[in-house]
Image (cartoon, rainbow, N blue to C red):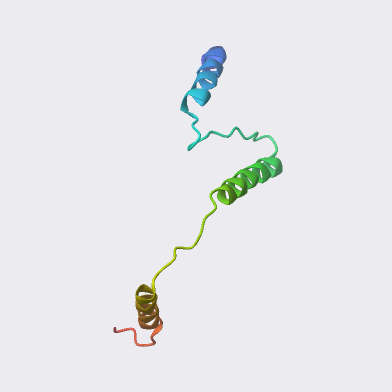
Amino acid sequence: MVERKLWSEYEKANEEMLPATSTRDAPWYVIPADDKWYARAAVADIISFNLTAMDLRYPVIDEEREALFKKLCKQLNSTDSSS
């Protein structure tokens, strides 16, 4: 009951904290938790949108490095576990 009396102060602190700490590079998202299906769908949508917006690409490697990777993969996949 003691903590319940402080509810308005908690709300005020939360309302001040969100805009003060949410940035373009590290935004806050408020997800309602009273409907688990909706909450999970909202989180999935946010993740999907942001990954797409990052426009990620595989790194381009030169032929020498690619040959090294192939050699290392061959070593890792060898049946001889002592090497």
